[in-house]
Amino acid sequence: MNRHDVRLLQTFKGYPSISILAPTHRTSPDNKQDPIRVKNLVTEATNRLLKEFSKREVDGVLSRLDGIVERVDWQNTLDGLAIFVNADFAHAYTFPFTVEERVVIDETFATRDLVFAVNRTNRYWTLVLSEQPTRLFEGVKDSLVEVTVGSQFPMTHNRPGGATRLPGGPGVNPSSYARDMHRQFFRDVDAALKEIMDDDPLPIVLVGVTRQLSLFEEVTSYGGHIIARVEGSHDKTSAHELGQLVWPLAKAQIAEQRNKVLDELGAAVGARRFASTIGEVWRMAHQGRGDTLIVEEGYFCPVRVDESGMHITIAEDATAPDVIDDAVDEVIEAVLAKGGRVVFVEPGALADHQRIALILRY
Image 1 (cartoon, rainbow, N blue to C red):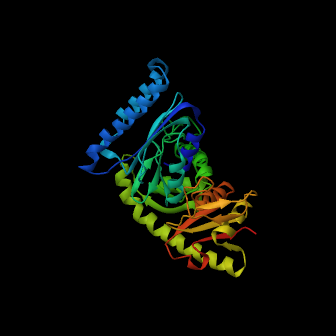
Image 2: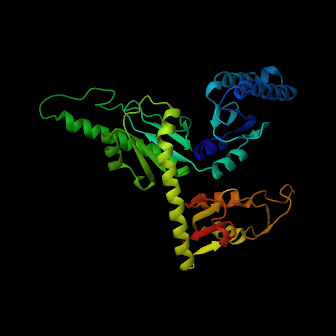
């Protein structure tokens, strides 16, 4: 589940929209109970709908719901499952974080838990370059999930030299022509990646044979996001196997980036181009001045917001009706919406800044 998926889900509106969220398990014997638990949630959703509508009115939605559940691969689940179904959309997502079990029937899909998880998880992209086809995966630690919904991936090279034959005849250099066609294919890949990166500009791990890595790096706009490379042909490699290959490299680079951003914060402090504490960070982020937000893992802060929307006070009770349950989550969204970046660091790393800091653009 990535930011692109969340924003796609948020575009769908129409009652009834069914959201089913359930914790799942990766291994036996715990995962044997997962289908039963989800089936019970489907029954709950069905019974609630049949109290509001006739069976004929919701038969289409319920059929789509049953069909999605039947296609869940229960042998390869992760830590959480979300199923979203309405008259226009039906899909199940697995993800490497747990969720609270619940059924929501509303005008829109229930995405708040997913926004929270996406914001709070160190994630990365893995782009597996190939002609047949190029695949994109979202990574969380050593778990990779292929991106297929709401994107152009997986992508197949359908130009000459790929799915079709190269032209022949006098004056045609097949090798040069094939290289040009491969380069154009990787430009297409980069354009498709832009749709994802615009929503979710994560670090990228590249996987592929040396020739493909070189061609892609010649044309990509995201060279600065590439943190690691795995050389070799992995057209048929499973998500699980890829995760074992790429995570050690990604983990080392993510740790290095954390150290680098703390050095950047030190320089910003020296230049008086920073904000500390949740109150100051909130104000600067909503003014659009945030370049890099740095947050300690596990930091949450319920607050009340004044009428201007620019000043907050810390609240004791996160469940009170006039309280935003987590100001940190709101700040993350504000910084990302204005083109900034967010980096999480170890607890205690920002003790001098009260657990949160913002490097300012000006």
